[in-house]
Image 1 (cartoon, rainbow, N blue to C red):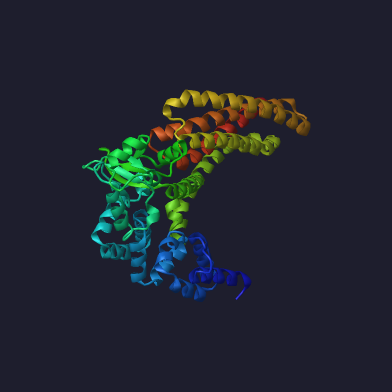
Image 2: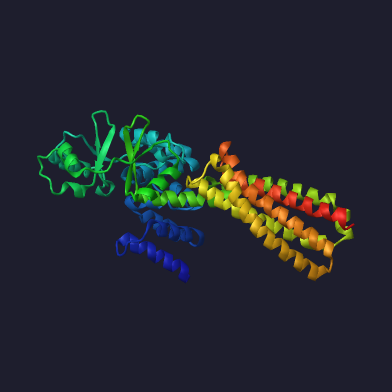
Length: 449
């Protein structure tokens, strides 16, 4: 056993014995390493994991390791881990299993208590970019006529089936379940058991409840937590009826998911496919590689039009990558900023004018500096004044186009219902490369040859 494998094996054993507490993500990473380098130790370690640990580790395993794990683990242990999980985690586990083994997911789902089946059905109905997909249904509620003693009894009953850590605050609802307000448990300390919630609310006077619709975009969740420094937010339907809540730890996961999704999308990679096995992940990437191949061929076609011009003036071939690279970088700068501002809700389609004006000012300033610099470099390199002017004009115009397109494309795609993070890069690179080469080589064909 080499030192690396030994270290991973010891880490897992220490977590099992309770000698130290290790984050589920690190246990999952160690299991993944054991699976790659020593399958015997992997299966041995996997068999010893407790259901309580398993419920968190399953969500952290990479695609290949997860697929092997659910095939090897006893169904009873997987079922117990799901039963011990909070509603949102239980739904995530079942949905992830379904991507790999539909029959097993169906078997596990129908083995759950009917209440958990109903929770799964409700949470699975939300798209992954909706707030409802991240909410927990384990909440503590009370009406105004309830006394503090009644609330304490509810807490005692709640702890019999749910972890107390899931109780963040007390939600006040009316008889129909409509959210009226909320109280932190520190607000209840100084009151007597016979005091009603109505009296406590009147005395404490908490701020009006901040809520979010279950079908609201997840970006809105992040914005509300950031703006109001929340530790939990009630999730309601269109009638204002409380359906669950989203807690601060869920928001940490949400932010990570959003960053991962955006990073994958910018590269044309599907984040759901990456959680599956190697073949499915590769197949999902291949689609975008073919799309990129098409865009590259289009740029190559433009270059081919000026094949004779390039043959007569070889310096053009040397400078062409400069036009494409700088234009692409300028476009990606504007694109990244615009997509981020869209995700945070800072701008929308109505902001087209202000976005374009801002990007135009930036690229005019930067374009002028870059154009003058590349003109000087080109002249010192090739001692050709006409070529220097052509590359300067081409560079300036390409940077202007890149800035405008980088700010405009995400807004247009968002307006048409297409995810800007997925499709913007393909459109941007195609238009900048093709336009930049067409302008540079076209001017060269007119004035140099």
